[in-house]
Image (cartoon, rainbow, N blue to C red; front, top):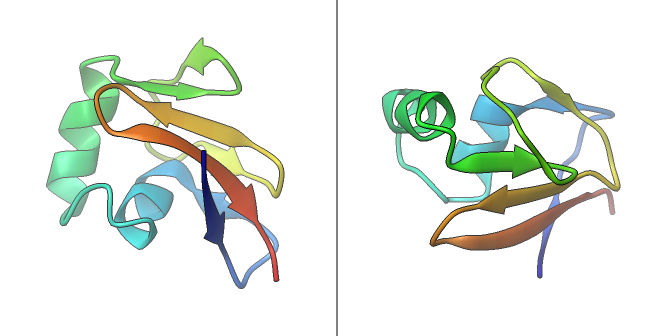
Length: 71
């Protein structure tokens, strides 16, 4: 599991995918999410604007598992 530090209280899922360097663009994030390749806390998430909080776990099929963390 990869730990990804954010410097804000929350982050949107699409932004998180870019911040964690899972994707390079918002368009790539949109496609991954729309195709059902992203899970948040074990459930498929299809909303790019889903708010993530520290402790949330994001799984991206074929790319790994990430935990939202704060410094």
